[in-house]
Length: 355
Image 1 (cartoon, rainbow, N blue to C red):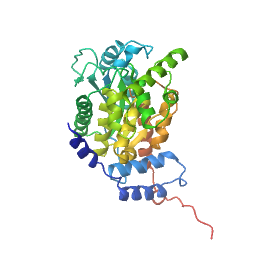
Image 2 (spheres, rainbow, N blue to C red):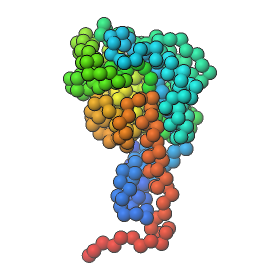
Image 3 (cartoon, one colour):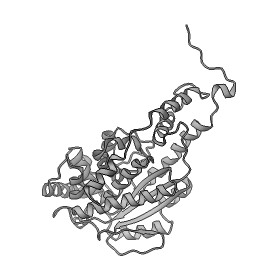
Image 4 (cartoon, rainbow, N blue to C red):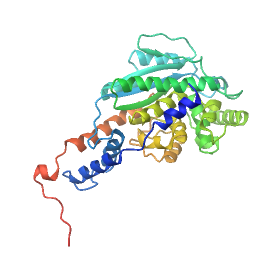
């Protein structure tokens, strides 16, 4: 994949369908309820109409894409867990034993697990094997990714999304697995939002305050070493990002190009969305924030993107768990939009205005 091919994909992303939005808005005004009484459910249904280009949108197939990769920066002691946990958790996903599996079963969503850079050789019949490298390089010592690795990872995101789009996906939730990836997300978001790293650095997998201070120092060294350009999102992603974040960036871009709504999860997947929207601001219209993570950087990213989280449950697991939980909210918005009777259908008198 080349920069020119990426630009071509970005140009495929179109504005929302205004006619569908107008018709969906009119339908909401005719349903048997006071105008606005379903709150954000109405807004969600109308935006989904604009995304799908139809006044009565539907979600028939739901998908979760989990990208997995390791991070060289873990050698700096930034996580409470060792890097060996990444492949162990990937195998747990594949055996159906993780939180994302349980929640995806409840949501009747298909789960795709993609190895884009786990630092261990993994083989499983259900694993999508697209390994680019055995993890990223240590960002404290230099760029996390080469330019070639960056574009290959974005291409993996394109390819995986294209495949599920071909299978008829109507809604995609994105998640990740990679010990050390909150460090990468902090570096990405601090640079793009032009905030000090300490403002976007939380406790990750459960480190204490002393470890958080160490993590901040590591991040400061990484940013100083690489000098990522805040006006060049790809430069930021290559220098202080990770393979799974780059792949999720590709998923988000490709989903918008296919007019498929994306539920972003927590801090890491939102950092990928931040990169994608910096490359093409129209993508924001295709995004829904599944939940508000306890990671401080997550709320800052959502504020920058103008997204209000659908849920706030003090979660910080990742894997796409918060995004999949929010699938039920989107389905509720569409069911009320599609299945409620209009005033005319039900023979209910509409509100009269005083004259």
